Length: 128
Image: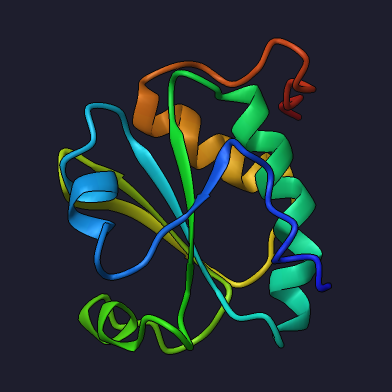
């Protein structure tokens, strides 16, 4: 069984049939991970996405959409490269990242969307 099939309960697998109710009509921001089972970088970031889903539990909903099985959604949102992550708020795409990134990059985008400051554990930048 591949890594994508073993999904954390906090990361919801979504299809075209439940996308509107799960993502567009969500009361909280939704982090959408467009992926494919055969995609190496997608498999590489899967544990990061799962960890973030636990970190932001109750504040942000995390979903995964398989682009091979949901081609209409991939076309609708112009997914030309995977992994592509999008942050939806009130049914609108507020931010997106194309490619695989460290957790800090996703966390920065999520915190910005939530209007919160970066984690207190983050190392402050020193001006010279």
